[in-house]
Image 1 (tube, rainbow, N blue to C red):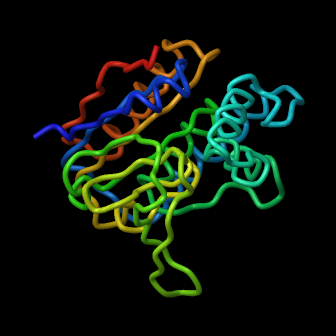
Image 2: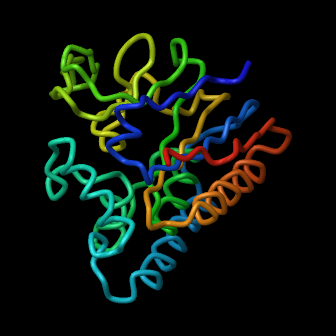
Amino acid sequence: MTLTLTVSDDVRALAPGFTHVAIEAHGLVNGPSNEAGSALLDDAARRLAARLDGLAPHEDPHMAAWRQVYTAFGSKPSRTRNSAEALAKRALSDAGLPRINLLVDLYNAVSVARLIPVGGEDIDRIEGGMRLIRATGREDFVTVAAGEEAVEHPDAGEVVWCDDAGVTCRRWNWRQGPRTRLTEATTSGVFLLESLAPMPVAEVTAAAEELAGLLAEFSPGADIAVRAAESAA
């Protein structure tokens, strides 16, 4: 069964240049970070540096557009960066990119190289469909604080991804909750690539095809489907 993904009219009105592409994959093989995944992350950092050509990540037109949208729904983009900008900043620092697990490393590599926010969710941990909405402020976001489970609530008007059990990612693509994240036991996942104008739709589509190719390479035999780009325009 195909996972349902919907974008609310409120979000479409907030960001009419928003486009997302989804990859749904079953039969994945995950595991610890390895040398091959690490090499992809190192190459992604090199591709990023060439793409920016001396600019800071937030000066890239696509990242600047995300900052404008974050400001529009009440978040401070210099403090809560979208996932692509946060990864890019780390890739260019002495810390370098984190190694999480193989599947996460693959989508982080594409995100950094192409400056596109990319997220991955374990389909078996999602309850119902996924929805991109503007929060009321009453939704539950289960996270971890000081090593223990904690429940937070998004700000009213904040853009969040959620399912029937609660928020799965806060501030659009800023912080994912642990409930649906990809673990080494994951075999079915959905990967979301999100873009705003002025990035051409063809560019985010090409990024999705690159990620789908990597998933097929590292999980031979997996059933992988790329959905056509869906625009809010």
